[in-house]
Length: 213
Image (cartoon, rainbow, N blue to C red; front, side, top):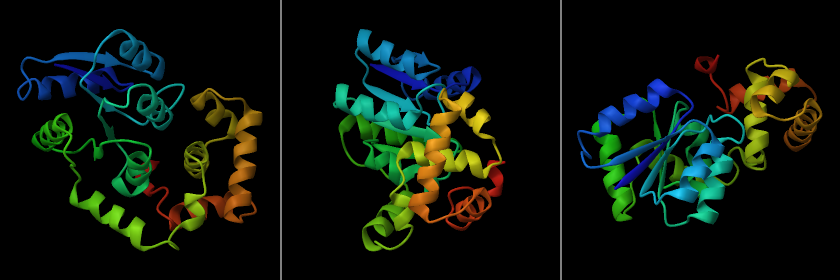
C-alpha cells in the first residue's frame, strides 16, 4: 500500500507519517512539498490514497485536486487543512475530495477516515455533514460567495488578511495584473466598492476569521 502526503511543511509531513505508521505499518509513504511533486509522483507510482493540503506553493490544493480527479479519478483524496470546515469543506468536496479534515483532527479519526476512503465508503465529520445539509437547504445563504471561483475565493481571503496585490501575486505565482483582475471580478460579483468593504464582507460571511492573521 502506498500513501502520498502532500504538504509544504516537511516537519508536518513527517509528523503525519510517524502518526499513521502505527495504523498502517506496511505502508510506503511518499512525500510532496508542492503541486509539481504531487503530479510527478502520480505519474510514476501507483498511489492508494492522497492526503492533500490546500496551501501548496504554485498551484494550490484545490486546483491540484481537480487535476487529480480528472487524471486519476480512482485515487481517493482526503483534504487535510489548517482552515476550519466552514471555510473550505464544501468547496473541496464539490471539487472531488473524499472528505475534509482539519489538522487538529485526532490521529485515530484520520486513520478511520483513511480506512473508509480505501473501502470507498463515505466519511464525514458531524461539522461537515451539517455544512453539506445547509448547502442543500439554503440556496440564499452566501449565494454571491458561491459565485466566486476557487481562485477568486483564495484572493479575497488574502486581501482580507491585509496582503498587497504584489504579496498575493508572489505567493500564488501570478502577476500583479492577474491578481488585480481577480480583485475586480470579486468586487463586481459581490457588489462591493473597495478593499474595506471586501474585508467586512469576508468577516461577516466567515470567509476569514481573526485566527487567520
